[in-house]
Amino acid sequence: KALEQAFMDLAEKVRPSVVAVRTYRIRNTGSKDTLVKVPFSQGSGFVIDAGGYVATNRHVIEGADSIMVILENGLRYDATVVRYDERSDLAVVKVDAADLTPVRLGDVGTVKVNQWAFACGNPFGLANEDGRASVTYGVVSALGRQMTDRLPSNDQIHYYGNLIETSAAINPGSSGGPLFNLDGEVIGVVTAIESASGVNEGRGFAIPVDKNIRGILETLKAGKEVRYGF
Image (cartoon, rainbow, N blue to C red; front, side, top):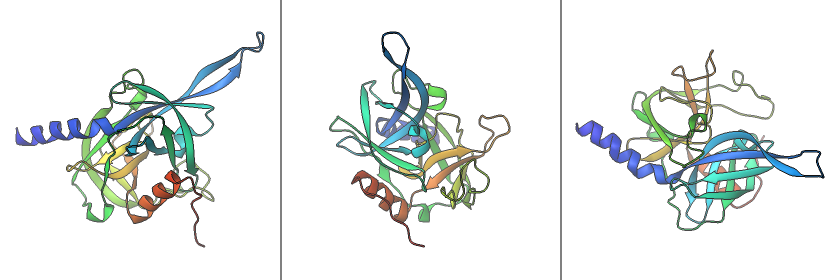
């Protein structure tokens, strides 16, 4: 009962910081030059600054002409891209909202294999209507997974190294959402699954939050280009 209560308290505490991300493409119908918004993709994100800054995966917003963020209270906002970084697959968007509840960032350096892990986000677009994120739990299955050559991407551009592997249920639409520890700190950014069926099979992966990732998010929030050494 105590563990169950801890899980419920965690979900109540973190959900206000997690958002659904819905993207669209603008298309011409061919009828009197009428433009329409066509649903394109969906994903998740989390508030990193009370002033309306939201972090997500770059691949969630890639190719979109219009981005919508749905908050936990159901309010919808058009979002603008502040900056994205292709190599790390991270992006920051901004909505015209204030007094949001930002997450607390943790540090993967304190994470241990088999500790509890909680994925929070928008699987299959279930939070597109009301913004209420799903929370699933599992454990940290492994640390330091090298997935650059296994995930579909250009390995000369993208880097998926040192990932957290988790058994928490992750599905299409979960990308860009936070992976929490039991203290409600973000220890990773949910990014990918490895699956033969295309849905959760217990092998999900998250970009670990460490000093470098915190620096990347701060750089993107400032609208600056992330620069890498050689």
